[in-house]
Image (cartoon, rainbow, N blue to C red; front, side, top):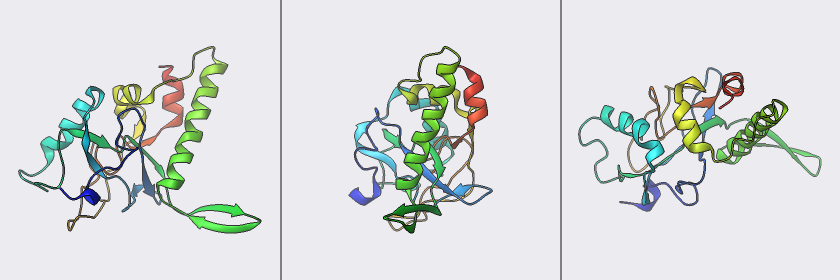
Length: 180
């Protein structure tokens, strides 16, 4: 398996919430999003149902030898990742990629924790088991797009978890209301 075809560290660590990227409205997977499966870390139990659901939909032998299906699957979630405007020294720059979606998602989690604290609830803590248990009830499923690489069209975004957009993009109102 080629190293550029596999999820890199630290994103592939099961104790990290990995954020993929979407673009446009209506959202679609950004072609640079996701990376698939780790060669080094095993898939954690909290991912089993979601990832097995995805793998069961792949054509038999699809991408054989390019990924380790029992590896930690990434990303977990996604957020907008394109057309961000940043300012450095008063100069405007456009950026994109998971370097944009990851801090955007972190800001979202801060707002969720703020809402929980205002209700007298504790902060969320480790996100991954919680997010995988909520799945469809707290995320907008992204079903269009793919992440080309390794000489292939890459994995497709599809219904449910996928290795391009994970569980999808967060629905703030649903997740805040869930009080989980």
